[in-house]
Image (cartoon, rainbow over all chains, first blue to last red; front, side, top):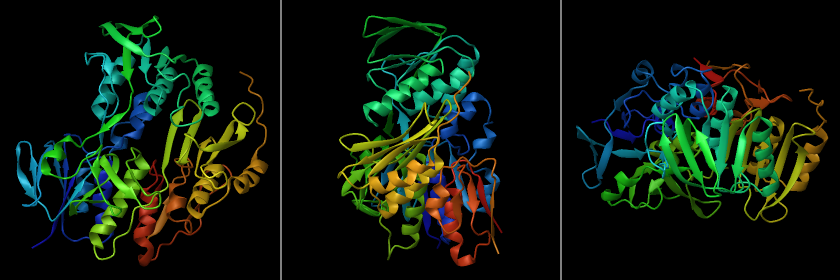
Length: 410
Length: 64
């Protein structure tokens, strides 16, 4: 009888695991179980091109029915997984019979952290296609947009809304945006970026309550100020979708806990991929969970390899990589940045239109980098992170590439 | 033999392809992908397809 691999989660991590299994020559059945009715879709454009209306929903489809059939991937959409019977190798689902599996891949992702100020119409989060549709519909009505949270999602949506011509205010309790990720000097430039593009920023201030209704909200801020808005977007992070696993007996601790091969620590035929996966990164010697696209893609490939090569599995040891598009900045972050790491900055946004902030934990070797509008520097950093490079070597390589940009006339 | 194709207009210089298969992909000075080879022997197919699929804007495909 054919072996069966059941994959729970129909977003990028789940879809890529299924495709990579076929690429590795897996000949058993592959069943992809999704909570949403929608065909699998790609999420990064939801705060950018899809929200802006420059890309269609069809263009972000990750796997349509024809492609699924061609690859022998059985789509089981619209019936969320609700539990796992580990001894019986069964995945339990809502409204459908349980599915037998030989291997199970858990790729259920993360959800937007819910608004602590209520969920009524006009107060949005942005994570799913449905979220994107309803936010886009409200932006089309015009009026002020208030964005709570200056992280990637909030900042990207603010930039998109601004480009659509809306008046936008971003509120964040941190005095300097992104300073949880970067150091203050770089974070300050992000604040400047928003303001120079016409976004009003209120930083170092939290939200106490949101009064009123759709079209006429009042955000009561912790500094005593009131902020009026027609629409509110709450972008305050994400939480892993792991609650449904906990009754199974698998170890869950802010994500499904996995070994260095991305196998559940208490069941070697159960794997995890993407935002929900907390695995042991051998090189860092730490358990890590990463909520980024590239990680889901790379981890999916690793898990597919390990399912098809159980006698010779590969440890998953990625260099973290994430990008964000905000206004005319393409921001890319490699490895580990901010915190206590020392940094050197090459280039300046106003002089060169690009910069790279290089971070080192040990004072010598590159441990991470934040790069804006500079693909060659990005590549040098990604290569350097793989092979090992000192900040000094990288500085000598990158500095000659810098030329002052012509002054803007606008 | 399978062949790699690049949509240069779609490329945004994320460099995931170069990290995945540096013998097939590079970036030029403007951060746009350069194909170092286009023909993919069967033995290298899985690796090159994974690298192509790691493009966040689907600018790369491997065609049979």
